[in-house]
Image 1 (cartoon, helix red, strand yellow):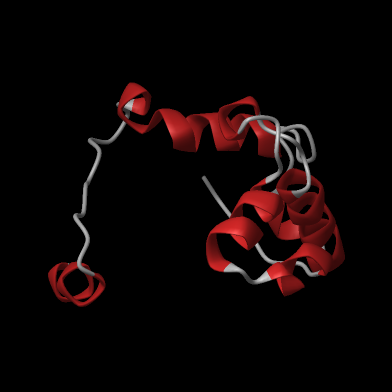
Image 2: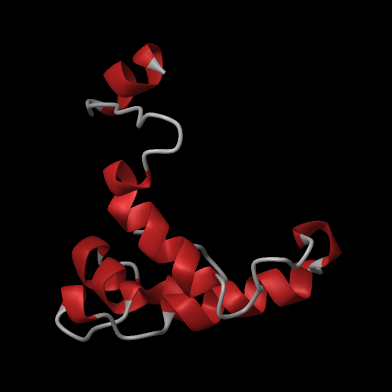
Length: 93
C-alpha cells in the first residue's frame, strides 16, 4: 500500500475493524447496495449481469452530495470523458 500511495501521490487510511463510523461513505454505499441485494442474500449467487445492472443504476442515480447530479455526470465533467455515460463502470464514492 505504501508503494501504491507513493505512485499515486495520495494518502492511505485504514479504519479499525468494527468501527463503521470511521467509514461513513463506505457504509452509505453498502446501504445503497442492499436495495438490490438484501443483507441475507448470498452474493455468490448474484450473476455478473445483475451486478452490472445494480452498478449502472447506482451510477446513474442523482446524489444530493453531488448537487443532484449522477456520479457518471460528475466524472464526465471532471475528466472530459463522457464515454463512461453509456457503459458499465463502477464509480464508487
